[in-house]
Amino acid sequence: MTEKQLKLQIVFKYVLFALFLFFTIDSVSSSGWGFFSVLFALFATKDFVNGTRLAQAYFRIKKKK
Image (cartoon, rainbow, N blue to C red; front, side, top):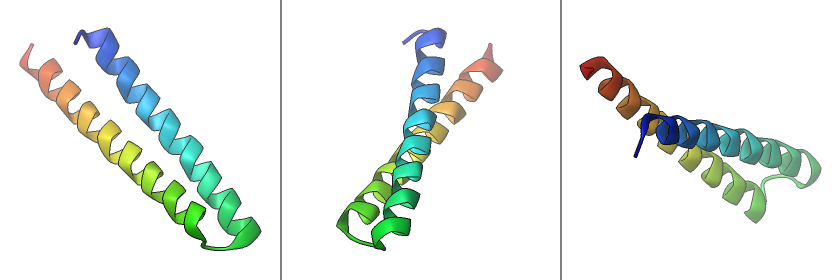
């Protein structure tokens, strides 16, 4: 994986995080904590954690160069 691809993956994960967070907030405000609200929150959390791990790996690789 090249550096450009890694950066793109990091940005994509954070965009997905923001999108699922928006869906979570919208769903909770309209119908409360239902099945889809929890599902959106789980997806948002997963994308945030994966994006953060990729960013940590990117900075570790960048530091070694």
